[in-house]
Each structure stands twice: as C-alpha cells, then as structure tokens.
Image (tube, rainbow, N blue to C red):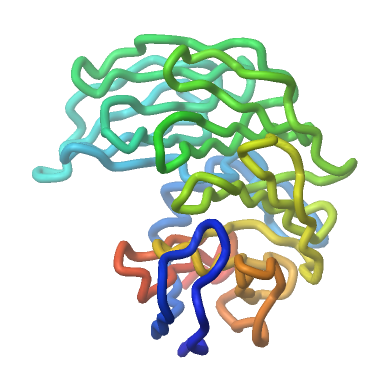
Length: 285
C-alpha cells in the first residue's frame, strides 16, 4: 500500500515532505495473546475485556497480563521462558511501559485500579485508585509525563506519572461510546480514542485535556495505531473487515478502506513505520 506524498505541517509533524510505502498484514498470533474474553455483538464474537494490548516488552522482558489470574507474567525474551509472576489488581487487561522502560502500568478492570510495576525489582511499587467504570485501555505519552486510561463507561482519566495520581476530572466521551483503544501522537499532544458504539474516533488535546475533534465514517472502530512520524492513524473497523487511514493533519479519512481479514480488532505498526499488522478475530485458520 503506497501513501501519497504530502507536506508535514501542524503542531505534531516533522519538517519537510515525506512519503512512505506501508503494507498491511494479518497478525493472528497477536490476537491470541491479547484476547481475554468474548461477548456477542451483531452475530460476531467481540472481545469484551481485552480492548488494548495485554502485553508489552522492555529491557529484554515481555510483560503479559493474565486476566483471570489477576497477575502479570514476566517472560525472558531471550529464552522465551517465564521468570516471575506478579500479582496485580483484579482482572488486568491492558499494559503500557514508560519510555525509560522503568515502569509498567497495568489497568485492572474489576478492581478499578492501575498497578505500577517497577521493572528493576519486578514488583508492584504503587497502586493508583480513584477510577470508576472499569479501566481498560491504557497508553503512556511518548514524553513519559502522563498515562491515559479509558474505561468501559466512557471516561478518560489522566495520570501524572511523576506522582502516580489522577490529575483533574475525567474526560467524558460521548454517550454510548463503548471506547476500545487509544493511541497518542509522537509529540504527546493528542490522544485518539476509538468508539465502537458510535462508529467514530474522538481526539483529545492533551494541553486542555478536552475533546477537540470527532472523526466519523466508521462502523465499529476498534484498534488504532499511529505511525512513528505522526502523519497517519490506522483504524481497524470490526464491522466492515477493513482498516481506514486518518490524515492526522486534517483529521479526516483519506483514501478507500483497506480490506483485511474477518473482524479486525488490534493493530500494530513496525518501528520504521513501513508495515501495519492487523489481528483478525474471526479469521481463524
């Protein structure tokens, strides 16, 4: 898939024109790791409890959330063997790692908490409380200053990672949003949240911590990933078996949707930004 060449402008772009060829692939293994539970919606099996990546890798170790066991397993990626298991809150379902690789943040759906794991000791150093509505997706801004947590009830909480406390009041998404994933631009200025229930993506400005834009044109948007250069956001559409591309300069969908497998759910982009991987939930082979 070849993207058109365009000028990088706006507050979260780099200078000068840039073009890139990106390819979209199915990533079945990713789905097996991330899917922790199922619900039925529109006749399709739809994950209900693992909306965002339930694993992350840092310093040669992989951290994997165990939803039913309420723990996180640490795997040595050199030997691919578990080295320890860490107890966290009830039903962990999403994990994010700080840019300095020092801490792992784990959202715990049933206990309404976020556990912070120190990667040096592989133990919980802090438990953050004060959430309501079932924390699910979590992402840490590239500048490392804040973590953003979405809940099933449609709230977005902001955590100050210096104090590990919730800052300000939660941001309220549109009624019936059913948020699934979130992604943050490389400059840490915008958070993109997919809303499966309303078929849209809402953009939050991190300076004001308020919704700045609503992008429509989806059916059941789920996974979202932003390219390393910040130019594009790729959005999986569970209901149409496609992936759409958002131009983050204009916050509009560009081009035609890209056909993928059945019920695409999660997305990941390679560090060089040239390939996008999509996990297709119902494309079991």
